[in-house]
Image (tube, rainbow, N blue to C red; front, side, top):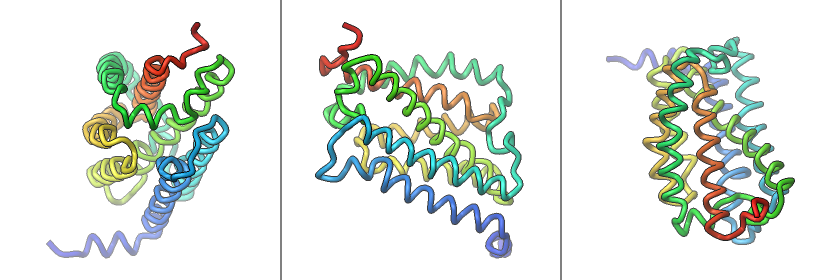
Length: 234
């Protein structure tokens, strides 16, 4: 086997744009959204700070990659923004979500998890207004995340093909968890494989997004409850 395919890829202008934006987006996201800011010694959890991280995620993981995909003439459905096989997607949500939620709640008592989440700190559990505001930002964060890793990286890199896109998506998604709680970084390996498979099989990011967001909400609520900070339900 020669290196001709690699030379052809490097010579492909859309592919070069894809690689450049993909690398730039991942680096900016890690350093300025999550988990880079949370690893600084002077980091103080706050709702405004957490929403700022969500805004950066939207720019780095959604706006820049989406613009690149459109410049490369990828249709929205080709990068996972169609509903695809909705019958399979709904079944995946119904089967996978309960399993992931139970596992997440069981692991939320881990000390590292409780120190890292919720991103805005326990104050987000003080009232409905703060929590719903955070929930909206969190949903936007997860949508951008799923688009980048299960849409852009998985499907946009023509002419690499789906197999290479799947491997690239898996590796990048796991690596971006480095710095988060160790148990979450390990769990990102099987979770990323499963989410990637759901996205490929359903031809859409929406179903993995629904599962991922539900798991994130369950994790936050479980930690708030364990820390006796779920005040808006009292």
